[in-house]
Length: 79
Ligand code: SF4
Ligand code: SF4
Image 1 (cartoon, helix red, strand yellow):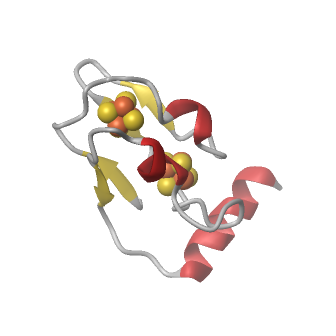
Image 2 (cartoon, rainbow, N blue to C red; image 1 turned 135 degrees about the vertical axis):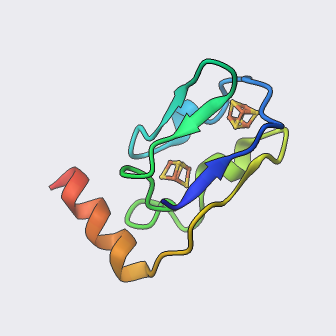
Image 3 (cartoon, helix red, strand yellow; image 1 turned 30 degrees about the vertical axis):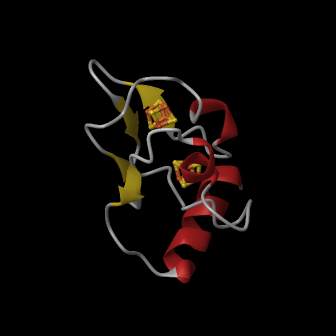
């Protein structure tokens, strides 16, 4: 997945621009993370950037994945 946004999202838009994989978009009610694009920022940053900027603390782990899986996903996205 691996992170997801909970119903506490206030649609403030702060997380979109910090995602290295453009995995976050505005949904009908709350913002959404595309599970096929999120790498927990592995490959680009030391920690999940969206969690760091979210004022509502509403971005949580949705599905635990290994660093190898996340790294492979990052390289598949960026070549
Ligand atoms: S953890 Fe990183 S890759 Fe995943 S949605 Fe947040 S900013 Fe994007
Ligand atoms: S930063 Fe948090 S509250 Fe703002 S849009 Fe992203 S998930 Fe929602």
